Image (cartoon, rainbow, N blue to C red):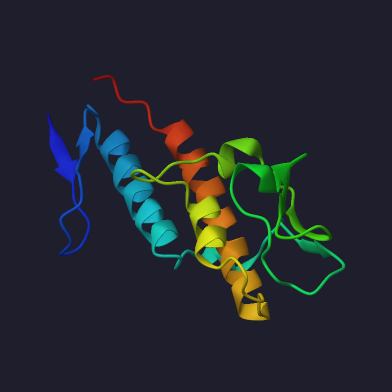
Length: 141
């Protein structure tokens, strides 16, 4: 049996369902719902973060792009960073861009507020969880 998943009213690419059992299909449906919530930043799991914002500084984004990542840290300036960010999360692509890098680049020169810090942490966590779900989905094309 073949089927596909689409989300809401939006025109998203569909995920082919090559599952042969009801359990497999319901698992794919659940994963699709989880991915949708993650990408809209509405997932319950995003309320907590294991990617703290650390260091001392003025909260102004000065460093962006490839040079702002090292040793599982995303640096925003010489003294402040988000820690515990796996390289796979940092290098993750959606469409033609890398969300973590683009978000910083779009805000270069701006001072991060507490809300900005929490938002960026949610983006990091959303990508982390997306990679986890992607690892669980095995589709042979």
